[in-house]
Image 1: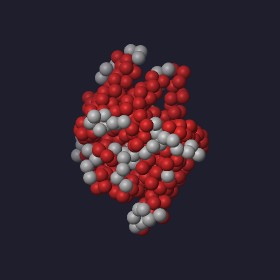
Image 2: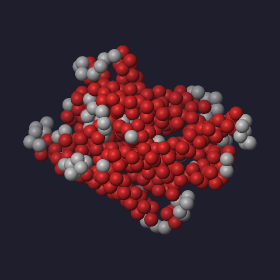
Image 3: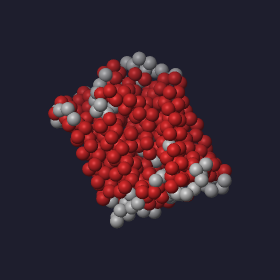
Image 4: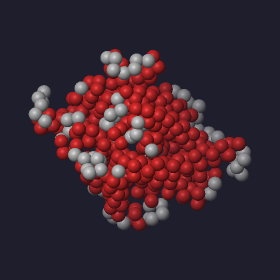
Length: 428
């Protein structure tokens, strides 16, 4: 279940649209994927080592607190928490959008899309408030269902390339098909880095994981490597086996690929699996968005009422609070005048999560320096590579997003000051 949380949160509805954005880069997109997966494996190794030594709820927040203290860890967790529930709005709306292929009235009836999206949010919030086992079971089932069409695409590409299929594949010509310039690879890697979000998921609900010091590291590494291979092979199949201009203009590149090499009905069926993929990712991220503020409240850096547990020992208040904020963002998206603002906030929230990756890698180096973490040469190399990769991805996100992401970090200071005052501690 912990592995399914990692894979399920990484593979959301967005993967089904990535080939369209990557198509213009040709082979550079493949190089970008390889760079992203290599960076992701280094980050996963860091998270695995930290989880093995500090199997505490809160994941990135707990590690930063151990390394740097309360205030820096709060800023890391604050930005990460906001990035989760704001980003969840895009996951939820995207998942419901795929259903409009089968139920056109969802797109045609004003407000129906918002109503169904909010219904899905609260249904999955109820699942997570019911118990970690139920939420984990939902995650396991939806993860299996979501990887089935991606594996099918990989197998279909293999049959086409081997000539077994009655529609043998031919690699199309690309603009810059053989272009391996650093700028092209960086641009492609900047797009693919969004796919890394979620590799840390198993570290957050540590209190609900059996034998966390062993389970979480294994789930993190296994989930990252498995999801990375699925990403690389399935997206590469679509990018390399369909004309670049056709993929770039497609609203459903995976469905078009299946339609071209199999049948149009099979392509339509893939839209259903894309919706399942989105709902599965939403379930996992709703678990994370509730567990993180709960861990922060227990650590004394978030309002106390979020630390209260239900009779089942679950952070129901934290789940409900996060989902209320998420519902507000979904409704905000349905105000036409706020659409551009919503898009910008999503970009901003994703950039904020990159600060979390950097902070976690720096936490590992600091804990190694102070002797609190195993200082093996391999882990030191992985942590150093993770720092370099995190800085590179932040650079790739662009100056404006980084500037606003920094502003978002400092926007949490009044909340931190209030919590310190509430707990009778010095604000300074």
